[in-house]
Length: 241
Image (cartoon, rainbow, N blue to C red; front, side, top):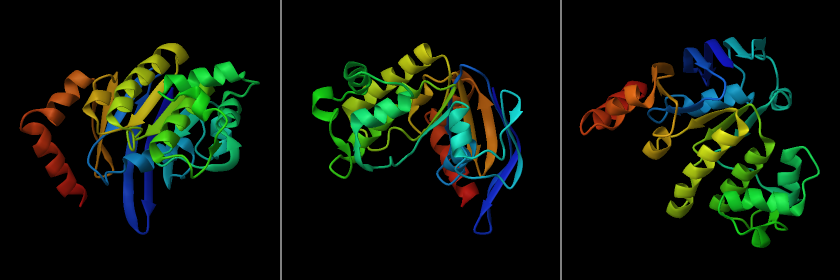
């Protein structure tokens, strides 16, 4: 279980997060949504250890990890997929997936992870993770590496960014399969209604605060109703601006 207690964060003199209190139960599929600039990506980076909160606590299975760095959190079972994946010159796709799995992965096993994200394994397994790959290809490779890690908490920051329509449809299947097989918690930052629709819990962040938490049945009508959805995002965007 992940628990955030009164977490606040500022940058360049601006308060980004304000006393965030949030609990992510084990084996839950949670989507964080809300207007742009509301603090969603910052919250994900704080959970991953990329940023450190100014105040408050972060607990993982009851242990205070507030002062832990990225490596310590990764070793404790936290994975993070960036909105813009990192390139690794000189590292092949197989190397990266094998490293993520933490074991001596066979070529066939590595290929299975690539196939799961819609990539033809024979075309990618020996390629370097460098500038020759498109943003969408990198995104899918990164998702494959996160799948290989099989951690207790997996964070995705707008995984749909740079993904074409066909791949996006398959991305939904990938998330559902991960949730079923890994038995860990998945936390996704997203605006996409189709991703929100498969969530166990939806968290709305607006103006650096938790505006609403509930099941998709409780939250989505207010976000995507004929009038209420548009009105909510316009009002929320105005609030953060």
